[in-house]
Amino acid sequence: MRKLWIPVLALAAVLAVAGAAYATNTYKVSLAKSKSATKGSLAKPSPASFDFGFQVNDSDNLRPQVIKQYRIAAEGLETYPKAFPSCTFAQATDPTASSKDQLPAACKRAIVGTGSIHNEAGAPNDRAQKLTCDVIVTLINIRTGDPTFPETVKQIKKRGGLAVRIDQPQLNGVDDPAKCPPVGLHQALAAPFYDTKLDGIKSAELRFGVPTTLRHPSGIDNAVREDISHVRKKTAKTKIGGRTRTVGYYSTVGRKGETRTVRVVYVDESGHKATATKQAK
Image (cartoon, rainbow, N blue to C red; front, side, top):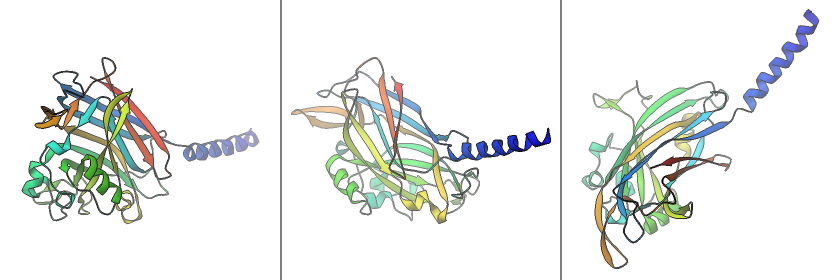
């Protein structure tokens, strides 16, 4: 009996290692919600709020593999960033500010949304390690891009975009170690808008990349586990087809059915793309 158990246990060990080797990321759109008065059209957009969230998990409940870029779009949700107050990317990423309240006045006027990000970090060779870090997100309308990433400079000038401002929570004026290791994380990511189509309907896609300094701080791997964002229903006037219209930062311009598709595309460090979708009102 003992001789029979030895190869069985050896096979089990091999299968356990193989299972760990083939553990993969899984993707989910966890929140998808928009609210507007009407379905809207390209000629007459309807101002809307837009709440979205996405998760990256692992098939074996390990720390997920690192993602380097996210692309977020909702069917028939168009953006009009140039109709709203804005600030520069340099102002939005001001490292001397430890919260949105310490940003320049121009950036405070340009805030269009808020959110949070839950991160898990650990040694590259130990994905069972999960050091957590929860940060505050502020979404700021910007008119310039990040010179470190020249493509954002060109695209934001053309189409507008957001600064995804990340701040560690504060406790008595200093970074709260209970929420995140105190590493002085106070910066923004430049996120341009791109034109796309979902289900054949014109839509705006927000794209932002995560720099190496955030993906691999101090040589460790940092994975975004969940992002939740809320874009407010703000309004402004702009010209559309020669007529002055009231638009939202996000506005509905139509949809194919009773619900709209919200899509998140994830690009990992190898360049592989994965897509998750969810239906929203």
